[in-house]
Length: 319
Image (cartoon, rainbow, N blue to C red; front, side, top):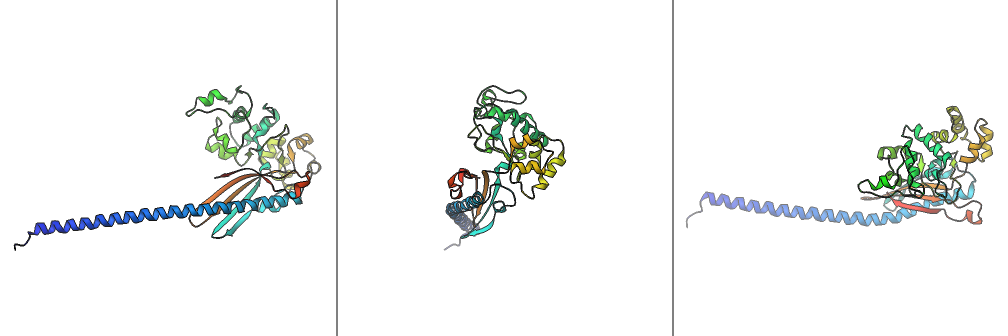
């Protein structure tokens, strides 16, 4: 029998090698897909477990505030709630958390009253804060237009439905109180950089009555306190903050220890109590992480159930 030519032998070898390569490639692809699928399943399974742990971590935040609610008539930064939750293990996960006094910030819902009409005194405070942060003061008018009850445009930066419908995609102005502060990203003149500059100083809290949400003098920033007090004398605010190392426990205490402050401004805009707190929680597992944010409300200290009633969850969202 005649031997096959060398060319045919070479072609057969190449074909065999190609088949081996193709089989190996297919096998590697299938293994990679299977590994990726198993990773997704593991991540989803762990994520479900982490959400359960998140509820436990949220209970820690509420417990810290319940203790605060029971034990003190004022809120300050030297109290246990402010210490946070540092790297606590839960099964195979690790939970961390922090609480921040939401009334250390300016509540933008104060810009209008319960009837949806603008509050000039609060607009002036917010405008001064914007100026201190080197941001356009017209942002104040844009936010007022966003939350007030009418469709009349305020001059100098305001905007109502006519402007927002003209965007792509278009949408309506809220014409109501802001529910979460993220909503103001949709307001005219506020981009990501401006929002990130504002977020340490502003919040959105419920306004159930004509009364404004006051700012806690024991926890507020110097920039906000200076905007509230309308003073150009920075040393007054410096002294106010220095003296709160021994926390203020009444409004009279604030005025007694800071005699140069205008008593009307203290009585109208400041407080030593806080009912609203922001919780930030992170639960990290081996392949997944869950991050939650919540707004918590202390019970009214004047009610009989205040000592035992858990702080309410106003909203809870995943970040």
